[in-house]
Image 1 (cartoon, rainbow, N blue to C red):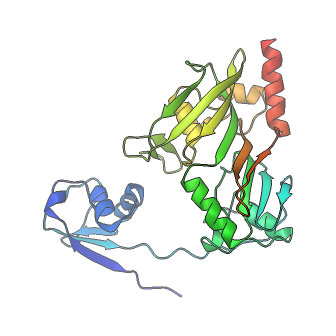
Image 2 (image 1 turned 135 degrees about the vertical axis):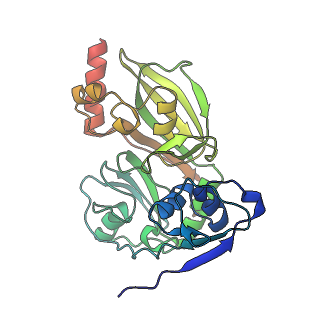
Image 3 (image 1 turned 90 degrees about the vertical axis):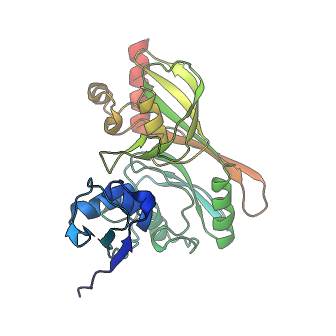
Length: 313
């Protein structure tokens, strides 16, 4: 059954005189700049009754009319076993898993593959009902192309306390990344804001309009063509390590999205970025004691590392 779109109309404040249409929409209606541009490009934005493009300029007092996007269809959680998803800890409050590559944390529009939530459901786990319907129990995420440790809340208490720890940046999140070249200095901090890429919706970038993002790294081993780094995240932005290392001119090996050398990836038989969440430490929500979990490298990353180490011998 079709629905009648919601139309919202507001006068342009004098303070936005001369702004681009997409910027004005974002400010006035609370959309992201990318979403505002999409609406304008789709002909769903009018100024004083005339359809306008995203880059046109607005004048103070003009009437800006926007056809609001409809509510997305509800995302269904499909209970489906996840091959290679190891459960390394389970108690009344939490379950800690090692997420394999190619698996999403939770369902999302357009994603048809397996998910951590679906895998836990298929294994008979009951998790917290807190959070959005499609991501209940999820307190943090890993990219589909990144493997490693995740904690999922089983109780409502655990969800609340773990979310607070991630928000307050007291969780110890450690990753190992094999990056191209040799960072200088060998240990350091990358403090650069991350936001949506201005030209590609599926990418993120270091941008002045982004959110504060801090990544600490230390050299573990230097090879001829790459360096193995221990990375600690102070913040948890989408693609943070991948974006920061690429901006630092040392993309994760195999990360073709962010400029890695495809020839090197092919030689190492890598089909994804060399990035693994190796350690996760936090205060247990049941009693506040500090707990830590560790994970070794999956086979594809270990093979790539062995290969590049042999080439450097």
